[in-house]
Amino acid sequence: MPLWRDEIVCIAAAANTAIPQCITPQDYQRARHAGFQPNPRIPPSVHALLQPTSSFETGRFCTLPDFVVLGAIVEKADCLALVPRKLARELVASRRLHIVELAYSPKEIFIDAYWSFAADGKRGHTWFRQVLGRAAQRLI
Image 1: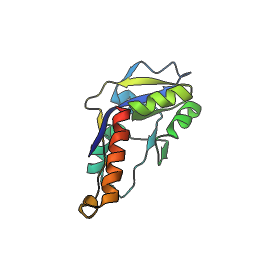
Image 2: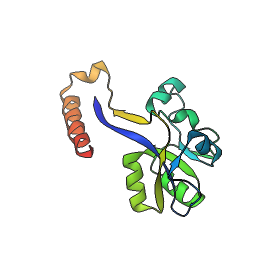
Image 3: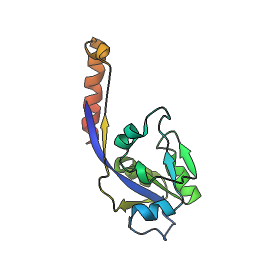
Image 4: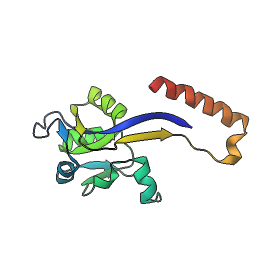
């Protein structure tokens, strides 16, 4: 079930004036960066679908199991990170960060919900999917 679409952007510490307003993948790779580490059991081919910019996230000095903590790391460690734009806006509102655009295509990310066929017809699951769908509509 599609929930919403977003795009990947880069976040940097507000005090980091050496980072341009738009960054290339090569410049990103040369910089220190922290990153989201998905479940290690997810194959790289699936990870590439989940995060289209994963191919140039090499040489991370720090990996974290969720996106939210990245804001604190980027602000304090003066590094870069790639996050969905909606999350970047929230992080910029609460931390001393700024958004840096990526000179890279494609950078669109798909946020979808998946479930097993066994759960498809269950009333509680159907109800939850409807609640989830309404909540996702508010984010668009």
